[in-house]
Image 1 (cartoon, rainbow over the protein chains, first blue to last red):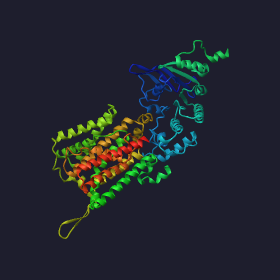
Image 2 (cartoon, each protein chain N blue to C red):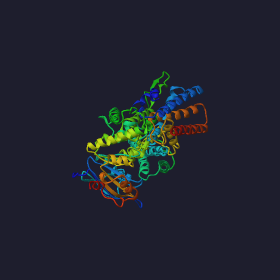
Image 3 (cartoon, each protein chain N blue to C red):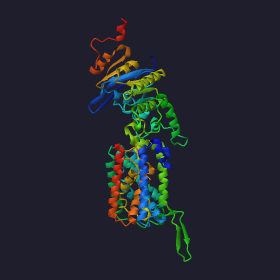
Image 4 (cartoon, rainbow over the protein chains, first blue to last red):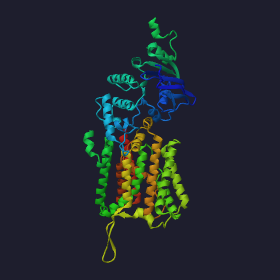
Length: 258
Length: 344
């Protein structure tokens, strides 16, 4: 992993009044890597992800994409840099149908600049069928779809375009077991394609199953960054809850080797 | 269920019909039915109601509400409201009249009037998006300011004697057929289609096209449907809202010019409470005050319901006071239906 990281966040700070939501956090992500971002609710992980997604501007710090410093004033800037986000809230416009949501902000157009609904419907049908073969009611407003279907649209929207970095904020929170397995497969597939993934999750099983590394946030600070082999679930829980590793901790993989 | 209702969609709404929830289609259908019932009812009540001449009168009267309603629909779809359109209408008319008095030809003067409306709309939009003031309050302020400015500029006196050319937009008609009779008096064979009605049709088609087929229209719906989601999806919601308010202001300006042209007089006190007619037209037509829902065709139906209600009650000899009561009840009824729809 000596190559340039896809994304580096260096010394990011975000304050709300006197509250430091994100306190001097640095983070990097390499191609084909899945990094778990863990922490309590309110630990600042969603804030950090929103900053990377361009939905929030940091007070301090620098973001580099492929080594070049960038500035995200707007979610469009982050998307242009190949950073896509699946939000926990899914961020779907309820009154619009699946293709409209899939292409929202990046609508396909005809030569005359009109919306090309036929082409968008066709593309949406293809990409959604790949994720969920039972997805048929594409022209219904998404408010009438099931939680799983809505999730599939949000995922499809993030991976359809030329994605280099994918931020997944609790992607399986609304899903049943089979759909969760589908998301896990998808993460592995994207990983093999060289996409870097930041996975925000509360599910230890998922994290240990999928991630190469974990970073843990506590009260806005980054309290631990470890490769997954170095730690076990108890260590990570300790980081999440107390903000520090157990007193007698040493890297688990080295321990096992001894 | 969705299959069963598909044929119910009106012909013009096809490309977008898939995007609308079935409830909205039902709403529009019931509004259309109400409109037909009103026409039938008033035709029975009054002989003069169901005639070509009266139909054209209704068309003329509705064109102003219709123009205001189209702009209002755009704003309502974004989840906002524009209470200033009645006052902006007056200010724009006054601006046009004053520039004609200053010696400008009619066409540039009218363009100036529309531009004044657009500027009022832009101020509304900037207050809503930059100062983060709720649309209700922001446009209420503009309603007072625009009216005050119109009254101040004119000293509350109407500006008259604006010339025949100024009256053409409001009083002219296409395909007007007049026959000279033997006795030397002209006989109107066909009164023609009034220019305001043609203007309304063109604006309605353009607005419907913009909302259904253009990216900005899609973004207007997305903004009203879920503003934060739209923002995260890369929709520039502030620009979209600004655009909607500018369109509403400009259309109010256009409506002002039509109205003042019809009277060939600029009345600074014209258009009081017109915003409520426009809102009522949009809501009766199925626009939701909570945003994300609404169509131009629905608003047109709503505008005609109000126009025909006014005209029919007049023809039936119902007093203006009773008319207010009826229209008020219709507005409450329409918003009530909107509420029921959202509760489900």
